[in-house]
Amino acid sequence: MTRYLLRRSFVLALSLIAAGLALFVLLRLLPGDPAAALLGVGATEAQIAAARAQIGSDLPIPAQFARFMTDLARFDLGESFVTQAPVLPEIGRRLQVTLPLTLAAFLLAILVATPLGILAALWAGDWRGTLLSGFSQLGLAVPVFWIGILLVWVLAVNLRLLPASGFPMRGWEDPAGSFRALILPVLTIALVMSASLMRYVRSAALDVLGSDYLRNARALGASLPEAIRRHALRNGALPVISVLGIELATTLLGAVVVERVFALPGLGSMLLLAIQQRDYPSVQGVLLVSTLMVLLIGFAADVLQRLIDPRLRERGRRPGE
Amino acid sequence: MKRLTLRLGLLLVGFNLAVGLLTFFWTPHDPGAMIGGRLSPPSWTHWAGTDRLGRDFLSQVMVGARIALLVGAGATLLGGAVGISLGVLAAYARRGLDDAFAAALDILIAFPTLLLAMLVVAASETASLGTAILAIGLAMSAIIARLARILTKRVLAQDYVTAARCSGLSWARLTRTHVLPNILPTLAVALAAQFGLAVIAEASLSYLGLGAPPPNASWGTLLQQAQSTVHRAPIGVILPGLALVSLVLGINFLADGLRDLLDPEREGAE
Image 1 (cartoon, chains in turn cyan, purple):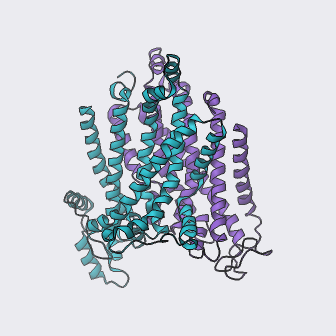
Image 2 (cartoon, each protein chain N blue to C red):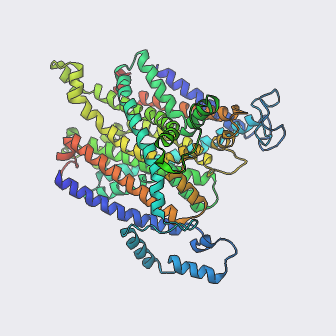
Image 3 (tube, rainbow over the protein chains, first blue to last red):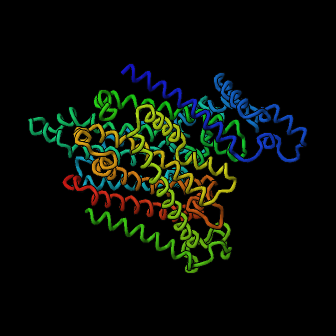
């Protein structure tokens, strides 16, 4: 396991470097001169040349890359072209909205989806199972922003129970206000997410419930709860964990739509704005931080799977090894 | 029950497909023409009322079906073909290569559908249906490849695969006889879910203002425009949303029905 952890950490580090390289190339491929974007229309040639020298886009590509990587190593993500403010602190401020939003929704979704998914598998074939599957089917087909708009329409516009949009200007200084601002967005994400998670939990549970080893365990005298606890949970958890990792990452970065519905100043809306304004340092910064978070999530999911499945640990590589 | 899901799916997708095809020949009104009052309620001339520019709303929603299906199907074809090939190959590869594949997939997945699509749109300067298909399809292929790799590795870790290898089965036949039949049912469900998600991703892109430009208004664009007037004209928020849900629901039903047909093992469980 230690060897695996070391190897996997090495892969993680390599991935980070590769991701940095990919991002660097990707952003250089974007059309338009960042220096021109920095100054806007009406800038003279001399001004543009000065701006190029300032941001380093007049250097040869390898030199630019070296500078990019050393800046990264010093956690310097540069300054925004638009506001001239350093990018990293701004990302930190944005994460204060996006992280609580995503994590709360994620936890809520797991708490709802796991028991419901297992029940749906146990009840497969009767009307209760059909009802639960119907709910999950419906949730899968509903775009998250539509749920958001409908919730705003019913709970905020008509019933005036909760704020329809926005987030307190001063962040979490007024926790109650910030909390209230996040209730509808969290509900929105959790509703949609639990529907899709439930489907995976149900499918994994059905696989396990139909398996020979579970039938054997039952034949050897184990009660159903006992057999599930000893054999089904671990086996069933494997595909679900892999899905959970992807789901968390997608929600973290996909929060951009929900942030737009509720006009929340999160990481997603920062990226959207930066793309619209061609604010390259901000785009780059948000993408780097997002990539880092997603790679860490993938790392955690892989390690978790190893811990749970001894087959992956001992002989899971491939036959003939 | 099984037949019912399949039929419901066929019905819903078929309906959307029919409406989408119909719009090439006929819509109640020209979807781009400003012919009615602003935000007028549903009436005999405008069954779903008009939008804030006085355009017939039903016609616009009908055109939306065409765009949703086109982008969804295109992206799924692209994502499935690229994803399954990459995933299965990665599972067979030697350790170092496989790790590199896995790491590359992790990075690709670091850009979920929507984010990658946003970047492609930013890079291409003009958003079009093509950029949406390319962006959504590529993002999907990473997710499919990762799943295909994990599923293939699970199959390869089984004893009967070792036995088959020992008896001299070639990799090509092993793939055909053991790997693909084992992983395809799960992948089909995933791909179908991805088809639905691609339709949703297209709508989301348009909702963010990064989709195909007017007059080919996507359901996402319609929803975005109607959101601020929801208190006066709720139908503007309800109709495109319902259309979107009906299509995605239909695709998912179709997928479930197909899975039950493809996977006889599951017969007893349902």
